[in-house]
Each structure stands twice: as structure tokens, then as C-alpha cells.
Amino acid sequence: MSNGRLPSGEQYELAHGDQRVAVTEVGAGLRGYTVDGCDVVDGYAADEMASSGRGQLLVPWPNRIADGRYDWRGRTLQLPLTEAEAGNAIHGLVRWVAWSAVEREPHRVVLAHGLDPQPGYPFALDLRVEYALSKDGLRVETTATNVGGEPCPYGAGAHPYLTAGTPTVDTAILGLPAGSVLEGALTGSGARTPVEGTAFDFREPRPVGDGVLDHCFTDLARDADGVARVRLGDPGSGRTVTLWVDGNHEYLMLFTGDPLPDVSRRSLAVEPMTCPPNAFRTGEAVIVLAPGESTVGSWGLSVV
Image (tube, rainbow, N blue to C red; front, side, top):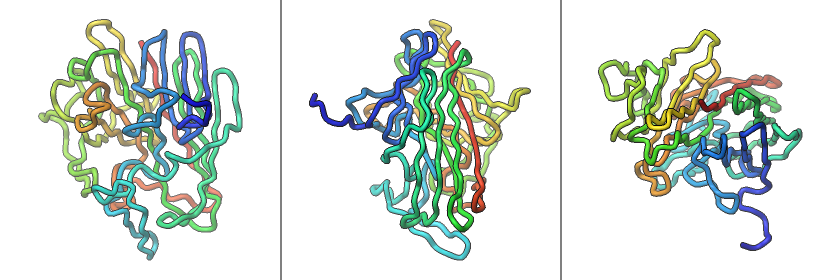
């Protein structure tokens, strides 16, 4: 390999005890996370580009906007079709831009990016994301501030692929505290259907099996601390990875990666989201930021 710039830019290496995290300049993404030398996320190498959304931040909207078109306060706005083969705008506007490290310590880093008005999203945001390790695991906090002169729509998500160490997710034990799944949510209406009595009910932990997941879940049951927790475990080793979300994240996208050769059920994407797919069109759970207003959301990972 040459000594040129890495595809994901500068690498920010964090450490705390036996935990190691790699965060990237490009997209401010989570490239890797290990505990005691074992992968927690299915990441990628420093000399590779992020593939299949691995570890990326999805701002100012997660997942897809059908046709890249939405109505906002009397205007019809058209985004670039970044999922051209399906005719959608996908995963926001900051996945491939450089972020600046504004705070850095051995166990944490804060990256910032100014999102300027552009076709399809004529609004201005100041964005910050903090990755911090502690004895409790990894915490990720995203802050968005509207620095423009008019209210703007906003949503956020992240795209980690989790692994508990099983060769495929088929034998992994999944615990998902979601009461509903959104039908046709990728670009449709997203009508809620109760999971009870369906193949999508993982409220009692059970193996993922051979079912294909590419679905958005909601109506999350929360623990006494207000946090919802998804657990993915290896029945052989007893190792369990937990992804938690705060109250600002009411939706979780789960994806077994079947059509993607680089994923192909090797790991399970568990994507915390503040709004469902296609939200800019449906209006569901879209955050409206007034000029000068901020919103903060956090999620994280831990291992037992």
C-alpha cells in the first residue's frame, strides 16, 4: 500500500482497559470495536472504504427517502438519488465527508461537521458526535443544531453490524424488545403490525434462524432507566453483545445482509434511528428544529 491518504481519512484510536475502538475522519464512523481482542462490530480495515454502510452515521435522515423527494412547508424538495438503482436517497448526507476532531483524549473523541445548505436539503446544521469508552462500554452521542434561519427537518441513525462471535447470525440468540414491525417501511407507508404470533417476535430471546431480516421495529419496551436494549448472544461461549438506545431513538432497523456478499449473514446490522425509513415523506417522528435549536441522542454497546 502507498503512503497516501487512507480511504477513511485519519484514524482515531480509543482505548479503555481491554476495549479498543477505531473512529474515522471520513463520515465520523465506527470502523471497529473490540473487547479483549474479540470483535463487537463487524468492521473494516484502515486501508478500505466502508462497505454496506458499516459503522456509518446516518444524518440528517436514516435509511431511505422514496424518489428522494419530499414536501416541506409548501415546497417540494428533490435530493440526489444516492441509491440510483432503486431511485431513492439513502442514509443522509454526511457519510462521505470529512469531520474535524475538536476534542480528543485516550478514551474519547469528539468530531464536528458543518452541513451547509444544498439541493434537496437547503438547511444548515452544526453536527457533533462523541465516542467515549468507559467501564460500561462504548457510548455514542450525536448533537445537531440548526444554525440556519428557518425550521428544518431532521432525523439521525447509525449502522453498526454486531457480532457475538458465531460464524453466522443463524445460531445467534437475539433478544429484541420491540412490539411492532413496520410493513413496507423501506419506502412505503410503514403501517405498524404487532409482532405477536409472527416470525418477527424476538421479545423472548431465541435464535435468529434462517429468516431474512430487513425490517424496521418500534414500540420498544424500556427498562427502568428508560433505555431499550437489544441483545445478541453466542450460545456456545455465552458471550453477549448489547446495543442500547435512549428515549430519542424509537426505531431499530435490523438487517441480516443476505443480498450483500460482504455481509451475507456474517453479522447483524442493528441500526438505532430517531425516525423510521421514508420519514421525510410520511412525516412520522421527524424532528423539527427551530433556528438555534439543538437535539441530542445517544446509544451504545457493551459486552458480557
